[in-house]
Amino acid sequence: MINVTVAGATGRMGRRITALCIEHPGITLAGATERKGHEMVGKDIGVVVGAGETGVKLTDGIEEALDGTDVVIDFTSVGSTLRNLEAASEKGKAMVIGTTGFSREDLQRIQTLTRTIPCVMAPNMSVGINLLLQVLKDVAKVLGDDYDVEIIEAHHRMKKDAPSGTALKLAQVVAEALGRNLDEVAVYTRKGLIGERSRKEIGIQTVRAGDIVGEHTVMFGGMGERVEIIHRASSRDTFARGAIRAALWVHGRKPGLYDMLDVLGLR
Image (cartoon, rainbow, N blue to C red; front, side, top):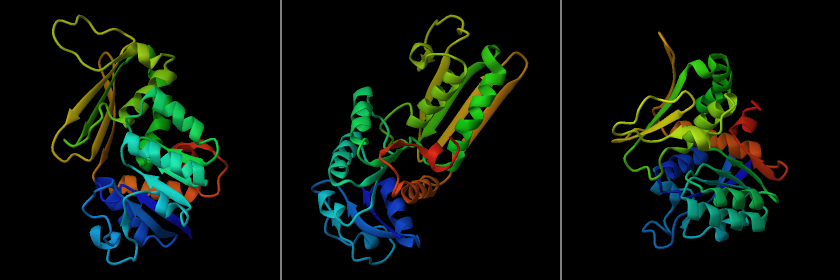
């Protein structure tokens, strides 16, 4: 049994993670946090997420919950996640981070802070996507430079960062398998008279519409055939269950930064 605190517990992902933590036989919900001034602060988080009374009150800061916590699960925002990671690092608490949109400087800061605590960080916690990351390496190597690569991602209208962290991770895996530098070959927009497509470029295109949970397509277009690998998430519970799996795995690990390939034993 491990004690888990969920940061951003009333958000779209936070609600499902919190509810599933309450149901999970191997987890005790130790805390739930939100931003200062949130209208739900002080209320029983189980009631807020529709899981019944738990005795755990929603707080407006993580510090209050850390003493009784083993692992913090955070799917909030860049600034909030970094602050929570700093607090967890000071207290020696493990973390699971599903937040995306970090800058290069943010990632360097995360590397530093996770030298003293174990942390799983991944742009997508679903088992399917992480299996796809493994498959893509082999597909890209076999198809090689004769096939054009395009990645299309679609999410709900409320998603703030673009492209998605998952799309960027998929692109990075393909680029590395093909021996390319993604910073040099990524193409994010096309408009006007752009000329012929270059052989090396990797297109990464974004769709934002309605309530799409998450869809990612990796297309390899050759002369006379096209190979498409598609992952569609129909429920946020897919990511929530992956985050819980990561929390159970990371507890008691050596300090360092891990990802879902470590959690799933795919590395």
